[in-house]
Length: 382
Image 1: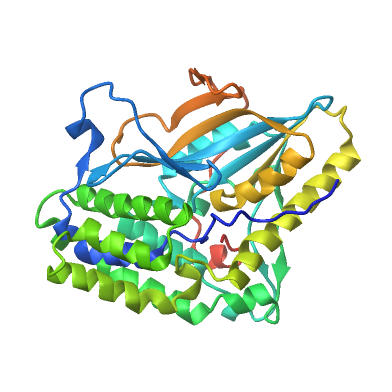
Image 2 (image 1 turned 180 degrees about the vertical axis):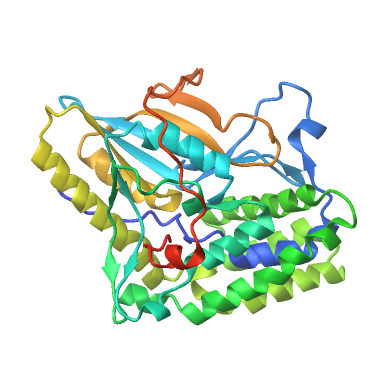
């Protein structure tokens, strides 16, 4: 099997644009967010904007919030009893989302190849990505992936690169800049009550999430940085003379120095964070498939961030695998606060099918939230 993984050009960044989050936060008072169920007639079908090779979708628009959904997709190959499952994920989301994803897609797999870059040597200099995700989650009213997923499950196998201080991937991410980003987000989280003006803090959080979703989808569809900045300013301050719009633009500019957080990921960073790691997990998968042969009946899941999935999928298709089922999970429920996490399942034909119960397996015990020091020793999620 060849493993010539390349990342499609439409994937322009890896992290959920931190500058967009900051700019949205300082301008959120200008955005009177509404929900789809408030402005649409009951039964109005969702119209989705998709991205990341159709592993991400969002049904919000203008100043109307929807639900941000991530896909898990199953693949089968004629003549083989092995099924491959690409389980996309976003690193900050609702804890209920992670628990449902584990029960539905991960616990029902025989093997789960999961991501997490290991940093060896000079541990005190390793990037504090978990701390940054925690800070972003606090601002958005969301949780961190590692607090909702049981990484000690018996079917979990770590499958990602290990790097040291001299490695290009290590050098691409500046720990000092990550700490600075975390410090910038802290005061914004504390100011959410002021942003709400004594009103609904959750609506403020949903307004921030809506702004992030809208911009992520646009940029991952190919919008360049200047276009994105203009769109952001228009979305959160329609009047060009509005000081809040200028404030958003200044915040965006100030955040440019946070290289790996920025939309429009530099080519070198994309090569290290996406292409190199995709190639690693694809090579490990190929080795397993070759060793097991086609007669072994099993499901092998790859559990990586959604932005990785288009490149990995390309190799599966080249090997003769075809998608047979896609399950959409509501990672951020803005419009549908009480709706089930599983949004829908689509068969290979594209026809919607009712959500079926996950394969019956014993419910594993879930870990308590781990102390910060313990999580710092674990592989970092990118």
